Image (cartoon, rainbow, N blue to C red; front, side):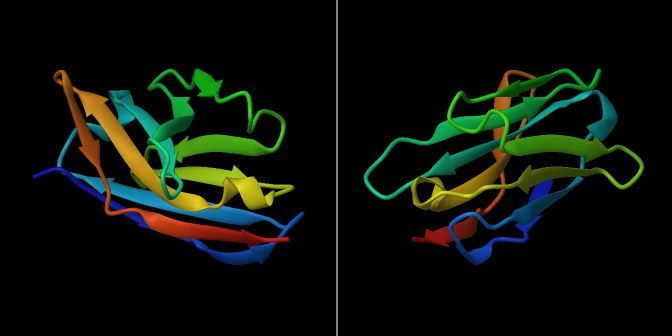
Length: 115
């Protein structure tokens, strides 16, 4: 059974930092592309960052230079390090695993950036 459990969200002032974690289980983590998506109120869910099993990364233009995605295969955890946060980063952040032509999602964690 695939499980993705996010943690690390919260309230932070603009310019601050947060680190999100996603603990994965139920599949071969090390070879799977993992990602972080976010959804703000009234908006569609959008890709924030992805990291492949070969540690190739991809970022949305809006977060390049501020966010870093990483993974620890031994701990089956993927991280999103978020720096220089802006109010427009406010959203529910979801962990994603993509394999076997399916998308698997965590429950999400709220990130709120105050101005």
